[in-house]
Image 1: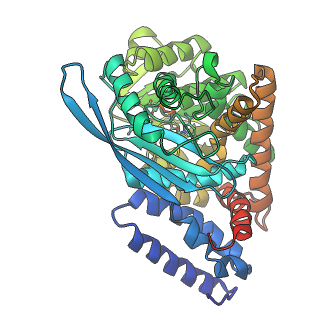
Image 2 (image 1 turned 45 degrees about the vertical axis):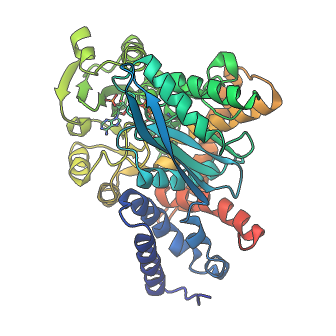
Length: 457
Ligand code: NDP
């Protein structure tokens, strides 16, 4: 049993020993180790004078998924070739509710990335205040360039195996990168067919079969509500601010839309081929055009520059060199490095909010802190998505469908509550809010309390 000493030196020593163990137990998993490091560096000082957490090995248990399932996903392409991908579901922590978290289909997916995402999800879900544990899953399958029928066959094969491990009260996956409405539809249809049960086993469903209004918008809209709340806390406002956004998927386009609605000026978006820049700020019409381009036509972002004369395309680069007031990275993990951070700071950015999961490398976060740039961490900023997924689960259980206005109010309220929890746990002696620490600690406390109640499980 560890002996607790509250001195900062001892705390640092415990932290380093802990991280050494995490690295040793998870070789070749840098993203996962990075995510644990980021959370644990906030939690160790917080629990320095709370021996029970040490004695009950809470952090050690939290860094180990309850279960990781890895499986073969065979499918047949349009030419009749048999193809094989790997699928995973990481059921990370069910202390406060059924595992909940998205499925990602992308060639870069591996166990490290899914463990990092599942670990983060645990704290994020806790922040929403809803009864949801943390999980994540997916496959190294690349939907890009595949026909609809190929995607359908893949999704059906993936769900044939996954269906043994999930359930409306056990584990409720959702979408993520590469998994949108089309893929959720194919997978839900297959689950229903195998089990002969119509239950809310997935979220992000279509409106005609149990989906929730506001779910498609929730992550991007929620992120911008959070940015507005951060600015308000600092005595500022979002109106008139220029916003640099990366990505052009679900999260990015809805963040751009809400920023525009709140009087800000979204000026960039991107995809894996480069970024687009619109000095005047995107209009609603342009944002909707980009949504159709990426989600329906599945084209490249450069096409927006061909279509609109006030949009320019910059191949093979990210938008972080464009001057602006607010940056909302909304594409993928580790897309903002120390150099990008330096460029954003030099260009006068005031606030960075992570709408994607872990888009900022640790060195970038440190640079923002050192420069006094307000920083909103992913687990708080993008929690609106899983928050409305939680509301989709409630509606499915109650066999009801709530209207858009009601859900919009709930989303806005949820983001405000998350913001205020970050302020509660993250305000330093100088009155400044460290949102990263606040989110980590607020998310931790609820899960840890539940784990303490269960004994050694
Ligand atoms: P989408 O698949 O809808 O869009 C992803 C976007 O990011 C696309 O523009 C894609 O470009 C770009 N992108 C993906 N990988 C890379 C890469 N390696 N380099 C450059 N650009 C890349 O995903 P979402 O919008 O749903 O998700 C975006 C982020 O938000 C992810 O980190 C996800 O985990 C996170 N998130 C999503 C939630 C949701 O509700 N959807 C909830 C919470 C977090 P291209 O088209 O070229 O691939």
